[in-house]
Image (tube, rainbow, N blue to C red; front, side):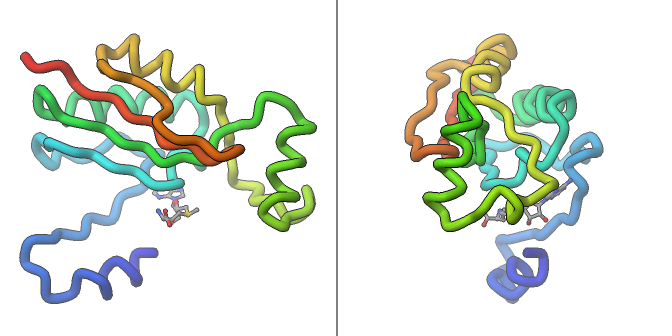
Length: 137
Ligand SMILES: C[S@@+](CC[C@H](N)C(=O)[O-])C[C@H]1O[C@@H](n2cnc3c(N)ncnc32)[C@H](O)[C@@H]1O
């Protein structure tokens, strides 16, 4: 992924690629209008997910938006197996680094942090787009 992103943005002076292990606190990169994550945070343990969301909230400007396209947990084991079958996987082929968490818990954390307009804006089985907005000051 790092090689791909460096190739994609090679020569684009507006893009800076920063390598960082999300299991560690975010570096101070300044304040942002938009923070986007795609299918990455589900690899972190649940405590780290919650702490990261707090760090993301702090790094947003007032009115800033956080979008997390995420692999989330199914409500039941049967639905989990249906999801795996739908993407052509058997349970044996599942990525053992996945640490899936349900949508409701994550949206609840975001609301507790102060995010507004928090919702799951799109979902297909275990794939979900979660969005929250930091209130204007
Ligand atoms: C399923 S891939 C998604 C890749 C890409 N973001 C996308 O949406 O197509 C999961 C990505 O999470 C990254 N990842 C897993 N654990 C990570 C961590 N602790 N810190 C940073 N990235 C991590 C992996 O390196 C991989 O690039």
